Length: 402
Image (cartoon, rainbow, N blue to C red; front, side, top):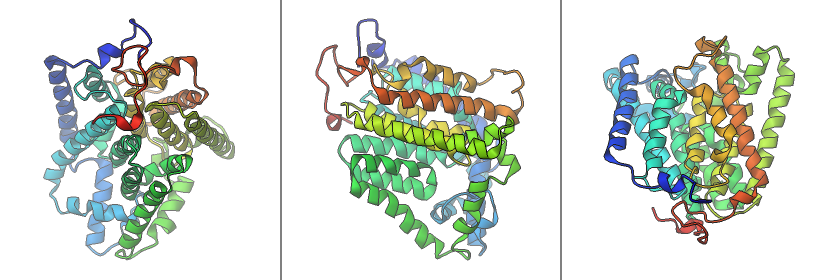
């Protein structure tokens, strides 16, 4: 959406030149190549899942490792990796994670009807890879958060075209691999899309139930993993958690009070997401900001909550930059990202174990910025197609070409 001749939306959606594409390819290759050189098994987090699959293949319980925080269905999904040598995983996983992040960005762009060959498409992904520290962290760790980073924009893209049930399947498949997108089922509830809601819930339940029957400890997720998640008993992991539940006690706030404040903030975030949905204005911002708001609200109270979780939401929001009234047009959106610029040194936060304070700042400011979108505004009126001329009528959401 454009508000006048001074708006940069038109410039952003025009085709990117060859030099910009060359820079993007070089940056992505460098990111994946660096991760492959500094890891030996495809990343520490991916190695946890693969190790759990190897334990299961050897007849043991994957939940013997307290850091395996996934549903039983993830064990079966990781089994093919467990059969590959570490030398292959070392290069395969960083490249796959990088490609999947690019796919998620592409889905976010198409949700907002931004051409995949546009300047925003190229500059946005280059900015994520070169100027947003959690991108590199996710690639190096090989964390399965990347499945949610693809599934959320994909599901919203499908929903924007009226394919709600398939969108529910996409969310359910992602939850079966990692339960990160569970809060998105509230979007289906808001929209009254009961088939999509049923698919999103039933798919991971059935997949995990079937997989659990193949485990020596079928109830391991409930007896071991859930208590670990609820209590956060791992002191090492707690140092990297960005949610207020973990950060505030490190600042001297009583843990009970921290939990209460985080829970209240999460409830407020869900209510704001509901109000944003009820605004019912045309265009993709409704889906993007409601879905993003639900995820950010969950990150405020979830255990654990890491910096790379932001990659589930940020591409979805940044792709809406051409639209006046989007969250990216708020100055606080950009202020929230400043602590995530690689190479910046912050007093008293130089230690890697203190970066959670920077991550918490980003998470909280971003959550408030998106929550404020619930109130709407005058500049949200006009065309909902970034390629449309000023004053053109909004294009139907479901009619966007791929």
